[in-house]
Image (cartoon, rainbow, N blue to C red):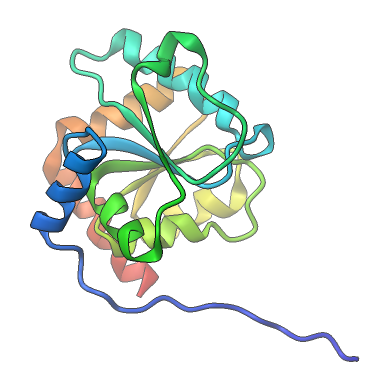
Length: 183
């Protein structure tokens, strides 16, 4: 049989309503503005590195945001940050966009992405992204779109998070550029 190319598309859905975002956050014991990781929780996805960088961010930030994890996997947070990490588990497609919309920032720490679907899902929900600069694919999406920032270590991770958290106008510009790119 000849090879087949398969794919998926993204619907041009509106950014989720603020009421839905607030209700989702309340149900999960969060306030709007958390940091979000979406995907499998495993070492190959950069999750252990993200945990280390998040711990460094918590030590330096004046008002650190909690980290919410969407998806499944066995790599749980280490004890020093566990109290600040919320496990959302598997989230239905209906609630997925709302989870993205409630975050100040999607963090994608993987070096090994071939596309980076979660970036597009976050952008369509109105959320900017922070990616690992060692992923040529993810960094390229951010450079081409203007929809995100990238980090190389704990210091640049913390700096990227703080830039977005401290500057809502920057966050809006990044998210809008990412959404335009996704569409």
